Image (tube, rainbow over all chains, first blue to last red; front, top):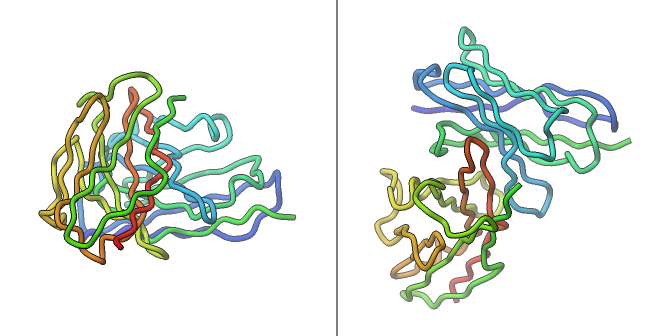
Amino acid sequence: QVQLVESGGGVVQPGRSLRLSCAVSGFIFTNYGMHWVRQAPGKGLEWVAVVWNDGSYQYYADSVKGRFTISRDDSKNTLYLQMHSLRAEDTAVYYCARNYYIDFWGQGTLVTVSS
Amino acid sequence: QAVVTQEPSVTVSPGGTVTLTCGSSTGAVTSGHYPSWFQQRPGQAPRTLIYDTSNKHSWTPARFSGSLLGGKAALTLSGAQPEDEADYYCLFSYSGSRVFGGGTKLTVL
């Protein structure tokens, strides 16, 4: 069965960096584009970034452009989100999601940016 | 970046029918925005209901349907059940990037 498992969340100080991972299984990773989506506490969903199935294209929300980088390691069946210059407003549960139109979701990992 | 607008809250009676909508700040919503709809119950990850305007996944209850209506994307629930009480989000594609709507809190009462 399709599984997406996020990891790497935690508490980080403002201005610091953090890398999230999403390990996938149950499908052919290279056939699918992948997204990161986040949800601040008590708020709605916010799309963060997408990477094409072959890694050729990446798109970002304006709120993270220039600070976050989405990437993938097909040999490890893993999606990444490298986050730099973190701000309090980046505090959220971060979900990875499969496919351009999003079909499957992970359970999320919580990132808290606080001093 | 475009803004996607949803009704903040909607109430439906058990067994009733309700339509949630999503509009785009860029103009009429078309199939080229590839509208998708997601359900999120409290404390849970989102679940995808509809993709590409009206396509359902194997797990999507038959009572949910998607369409374009009056320049907006629409999610119609026919025969609401208590378990349908949740937050609903739409997602549009804009030339590669994506934007979620602010979400609609659906109450079944």
